[in-house]
Image (cartoon, rainbow, N blue to C red; front, side):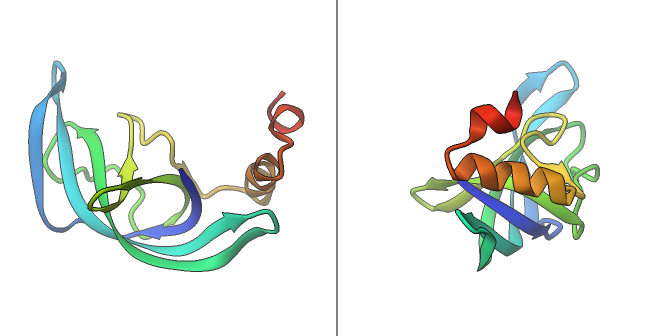
Length: 119
């Protein structure tokens, strides 16, 4: 997992829908661009500009409720094809407009102080 802070673009190209996730949700998959910084022990310090595959349960094919082009903190996963952003129906694990305190808590966790930070 790669913690990142930055902005997710709207879907680039087609949004494909897969199987049912819940009664009125289907699994959507699309390509987007993520521009921001990666987390190191010193904070969000390394530039990152990558194309990511987004997987998210959506009520409609457009997934309009995601925080496109807004500051977010998220976790990217490395897959064979490249980076993926796997989201839940409420955009978890992505935090929209993360506060400096939330970014510092994640940095502290990267430094090995997760228990102190999240308890």
